[in-house]
Length: 279
Image 1 (cartoon, rainbow, N blue to C red):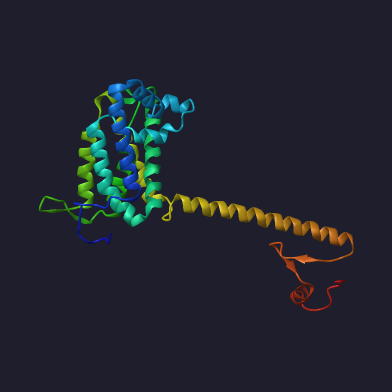
Image 2 (image 1 turned 60 degrees about the horizontal axis):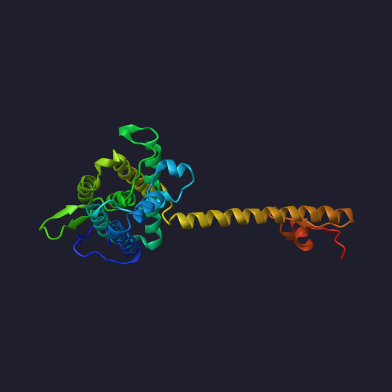
């Protein structure tokens, strides 16, 4: 999507990670809706094991910081979340590519969960560590923030209404509408902090994380550390070999990187003369 052009949100692409996330969340919701009528115990177990319960996370159920985003409380919850994910995520994934898109989404899902966990232990607004949180709102609000930053002045045609609006204003409206639509009074403010956490981590992802993505940065760091280790081993082996050869009245020379310097090159480097090398 080229910046500065008017775009339409009528029929965004439905592919890639956006499609996978929507189909997964919708499928799980339908499974829970059907199971709730015939096997409510299954739904209870899913909520207990997959929903974000800060006290359980602190006891070792760390997978909940991701799995909670797959569950939704009711039809309006999953409908508005998936609709927003489709409209915003499709364009971000097309511009970013699938790897950077899923990194941003996951980063915001986990970041929102961490904010909820921290706030639950403050007991602010009646929040309790034993309370459960579900929904993909944290990741979606992170994508909303990313879209609003990257395409702030992008004019979009809001189908089917006959007028255009800048992305930053539309995203602001959607944030307010989404908060009202998915806020569950029974959660005692937890949902709001998941939304705010997603917005915060979406901002951090766009502003401070490497443009090529977390995976690329991690791989670059890994190879840098690995290569530094191998260089250290080579220098160490070179020093040991120099000592060994010196003990046997031989002289060999290595540079600061542990690379062997042939006698002829060493002679040129030292300004001529014989090096004393004996074959």
